[in-house]
Amino acid sequence: MGADPGGDRGSAPAGADWQRVVLHSEYEPDRVAWVDDTHRQLALPAEAQRWTVQQLLRSVRYLLRWQAYERGELFLHGGLVRAGRAGIAFLGHKRSGKTSGILSALLNGGADFVSNDDLVLTDADGLPTALTGYGSPRTVNVRTDALLALARDEPDLMTLLSDSSHPANAFRGRHHTVEAIRSDAGTDLPGSVWVRCAELARVTGRSLLPESRVDAVVLARFDSEAERPTLTRLSPGEAHRAVSAHVEETATKYDPYLAAWYPRTDTERRTRLLRRLADGTPCFHLTQAMGELGVATSLLLGAV
Image 1 (cartoon, rainbow, N blue to C red):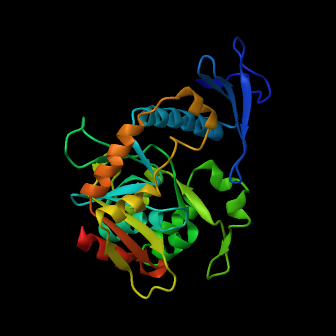
Image 2: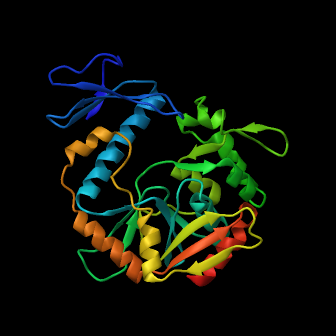
Image 3: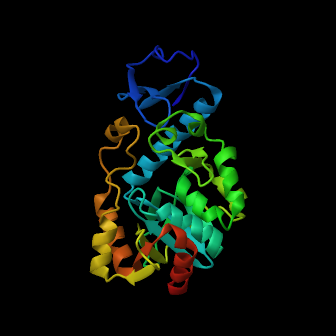
């Protein structure tokens, strides 16, 4: 894998059977890659410096994720924090409140950050201990409405709207058009912002951790009509069904050509990990409203 030194997005690298792949996004420029499936090689064209580095980092992350998926590790659509000695996984679909819950845990619960949106679970050589969760180095996409709600008590969070360095923040994409919002002061703001983990640690004052034991699982849901947050413990059967809805069916939806490079993965191990998680880890449904994130965090930490 490498960057195409010629810098021409239209010319293939020399010496192999390369195919040009273009992946479209509504949030950033098209991602162009040259792929050689026969030799499992990948080349990226040189672009503007910020995007070249970003695309190289992504390719490394996707390859590492596929190697973990091949080993049968369990991929979940969620994130992970550690509050004191408790590792708390937040699961949920897009805009369910999981990232908002993670941010509130950092700000209101003194938690440290492990991952967001790309949680992977593994075990220690099959030993009957708690599962370990980890993520991969990537930015955190934060809803601006959640940022504004949390900034009422933590005004330094507002600096993320202007100081976050991910190049997608400057791209005139969907987040600046159809998803844009207006602040109470009448300022037009993007619907979300991409925040690097180091930037998140700086503004929250919390630490970044490479991994944590998973002691509880929270399935988050926003309810604008809820007067107070509610937390409900699930039975193992309910937990299995609820967590199964957030299991990733592939290592990553990005760079889909990589799936052909890893045709055999350990599905039996993933099934065992899912069962162990549901049977042996307390799982909860958390219903919260945007204006009560701190209360929801207190409720959750009191239970775990």
